[in-house]
Amino acid sequence: MPKITFIGHSCVIITHDSHTLIVDPFITGNPSATIKAGNVSPTHILVSHGHGDHFGDTIPMATRSGATVIGTYEICQICGKAGVATHPMNIGGAHQFPFGRIKLTIAHHSGGYGDDASQYAGPPVGFLITIGGKTIYHAGDTGLFYDMKLIGEMNAIDLAILPVGDNFTMGIDDAARAIEFLRPKQVLPIHYNTWPVIDADPSRLAQLSPGVKVTALKPGESLTL
Ligand code: NI
Ligand code: MN
Image 1 (spheres, rainbow, N blue to C red):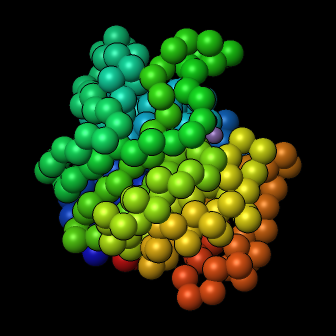
Image 2 (image 1 turned 45 degrees about the vertical axis):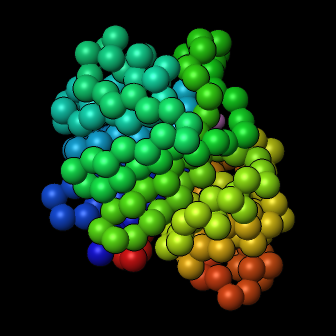
């Protein structure tokens, strides 16, 4: 049974057996995070796009832990130049890893890297992660898109991890529509309340999505699938 721990913002840690995956390891400088980046030793680091609030601690964490970075070709080029192990992928592609399967999905967003996000870092992506017999969809940063319907038709999603903070991504109302398209068993809202501009009330998402379990974890809290 995979365990999912919400670290804050878009960062989650997924553990199953001896495998520890961290998605979007923005911990240093993350006002929501209750842990230190130096205390996380993942086996794999999944990076959805180049923005600092997602790429975050990727390079120092991978250097220290020996974790393999999984992301687009361009994200992996940036990481490879820093000397860390990578597994480059791209949208629509899936790969079987020792822990399970990952498929990259589209995400409607931007994807620059660096202090001013001016360095091309490939397109933003989401991740379909199959681990321990469960399917988890981490949408990354994205607006609502109709192909979520296709993702929902092709995958029995046990947990959808969806941004809800508005302004930079979907807000609550669009996330409710995303849930209709994706038909997940459970939803973990992310990318909200980190800063005032993305304040949101996830209880409103639960009201708009009856029949789906909306689990709003506080940073540091976990759920088990
Ligand atoms: Ni972003
Ligand atoms: Mn973001």
